[in-house]
Image 1 (cartoon, rainbow, N blue to C red):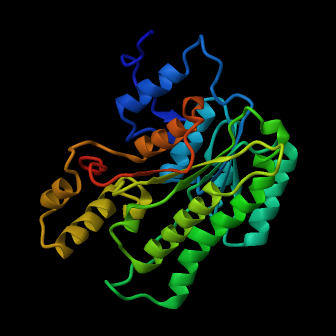
Image 2 (image 1 turned 180 degrees about the vertical axis):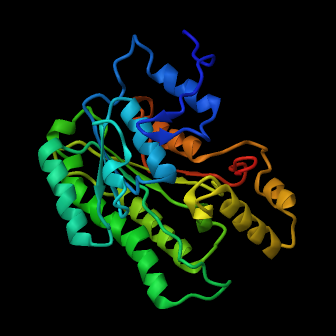
Image 3 (image 1 turned 135 degrees about the horizontal axis):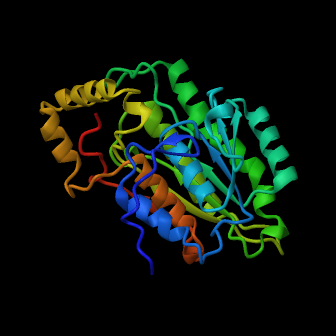
Length: 304
């Protein structure tokens, strides 16, 4: 097979900065786009929540590069003009407005169909509470987005995933969870992601109507992906946030990063997105109810 590793990574894809994309991910994408291949997701429609930044942004780009038509929700108005190509449509929507999110999902399904749903949208309490402390208003806001909003979107999409037109098109529901399920962090974030993961377990046991294609379920639980806006919008903010986390554990920043990354592997939002899309490939059609946990070895070496 022709190698593409020598090709330089472009500065942007669909209007998205590729600053932290690694050569392995770029080579994987180029191989997947080999001229002799039909685009792997040609004719498929992806619905992705939280596509304005971080992992969600990269999920949109990779899906579109591999032939999918992508619709993505985000509370940010910037989502409407963020992407340059027609294959990615950004829709400003607070998925915490359950009825609006469900209505838009149905409109997409009625007009285009839906073959894959990726539940990625998630927020941290802001400002982050002190250890062991939270207010109920903030708790409810995090639950509303991370759990119930994503569930509302998926519930509305199920009828389209089960459409007979999706027979042999591998309908999939992928859920972006959190390593906080096994190593609890802020109560609202941990509980909301646990609720979403449990919803995924429910979906894995949910049978489609007779004669309709069976959806499959995949859960991915990333850990310490430090190039996302959760850790700050700028290099300085990310460094400050990481230093604060290290100080709470009585460590230097270098000690904290080394302890968080026993495998010494650079891991970014591009790689998390690639991992999720990889599970969506036809080669993984038989994998259902699968959960992948990233415990350590998942940070960019210096996120500034």
